[in-house]
Image 1 (cartoon, one colour):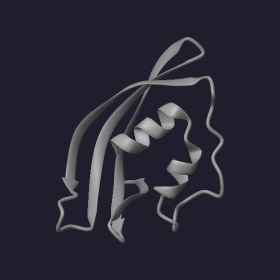
Image 2 (cartoon, one colour):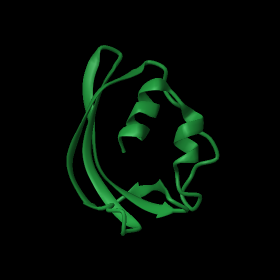
Image 3 (tube, one colour):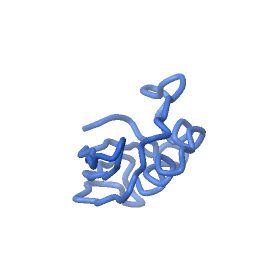
Image 4 (spheres, one colour):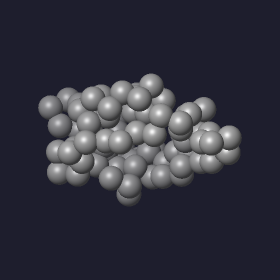
Length: 91
């Protein structure tokens, strides 16, 4: 989750697409260059241990856009395939 947040903050579309599960991955992303991600709060998580293949992460991602503060609150679902955690969708 933290690496995907960092990729959003840096505008790294290639990394975001590479860490998105193929079943839900969009063909492309159109990130807003005026959106500035300011900080991430991890609120809770389930699963995700070395012996599990699924997990969720509830988070708040704070950002500024056009001078206004806002927050994205989501509980994200992840699966591990071939040793890599992939974002699937909101839970």
